[in-house]
Image (cartoon, one colour):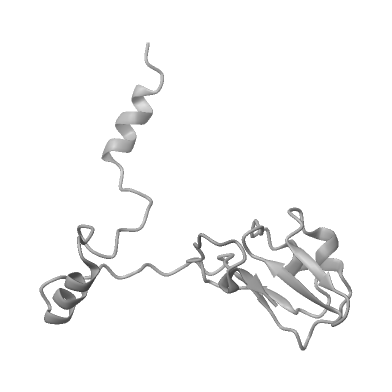
Length: 132
């Protein structure tokens, strides 16, 4: 009668897959929260480590890059653009889908994936979201 009931009940008893908030409860005042952490009154949940093959923010080694543009050709969301005057690339992380195809095709290994995943910003052109 209710096909989703079994799944719903299963999810209610399983451990969540998400990380815990750094503190047990969201702080009303971050300043007061940090003071309590320093005094030892509040405990911060330790972050979990990323898996070995995690695909986070792209790392670009400008010195290794030969300007072949293969990464641009394989990038599904067109997150990489070529800078003709420098014969180098610019990567817009806000557009990236972290598929790692650019890393796989780079003949000199100028691109790799880091374990950085805290990339949120309200500005898609934020300097943290552009790799040059």
